[in-house]
Amino acid sequence: MHRRKFLASSLAASASAAVAPTQALTGEEDRNSGREYYLLRRYGLRSGPPVKLANQFFRDAFIPAANRLGITPVGVFNLVLGPQTPALYALLPSASLTLLANLDAHLESDSEYLKSGADFLNAPAASPAYVRMEGSLMLAFKGRPRLQLPPTTAARQPRTFELRTYESPSERDHRRKIEMFHSGEFDIFRSAGFWPVFYGDTLVGSRMPNLTYMLAFKTLAERDKLWEAFGSSPEWKNLTHSPKFDFEAIVTNVTNVILSPASYSQI
Image (cartoon, rainbow, N blue to C red; front, side, top):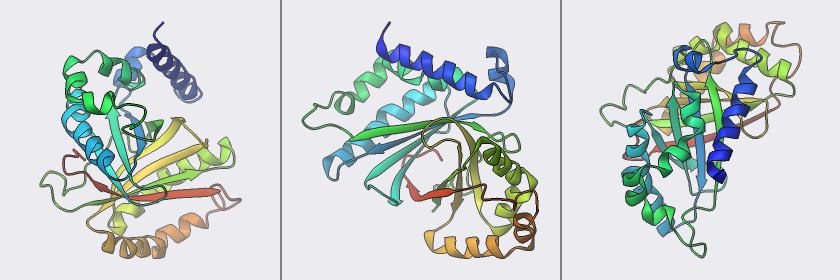
């Protein structure tokens, strides 16, 4: 069996197993559960020509090919604040777990993708297109089953994104943190003025158990005001002091990065 196809099949099986405790998905349920899956990839780059090459690849080859598969909208973001710059992040939502798990196999059978992305895909080892690619596969939270575009996306107006990952010390605490979002945290973010984009429970990835979510706002200058409004809200204070969520540290590490959308990003 071709190595990429084997890995894709293994990923699909692993993801299905990870979902099993809360939702045993058959192929039909995969399509109709109403909750999206998210494939998030981070491409570490080298400064200079590789950055231009990567942007050309995502604009001219990757996004059009993903759209042909029915994956839309596709977000591509530049790392503004965070470790190991430069880097590009790609976010792909889909109702089909199988499609995302087998994405590379689908792309390899797309002749237009292979032609348009040839310079990136066939870059020599002495001058690679990227340093490393890391990825995670997530299931949308039940209370926020689908990705939501910021209101400024359609008009291509300014928007900035914050991607946050919360690691928990145990599966019990991880589930408790997800419950905390469903117990009011979603609404507090909106009341503070954030534009939530997605909330995902990591099924396959590193540093598990963890969850990842993305917030949007107009500018980086606006961010501090929004977080201040969030942290000072009575609803947040009541939620954090609830015995249900305050009995121990249910989040032990937070990673957050600031992203700006590429000019061609669909998110």
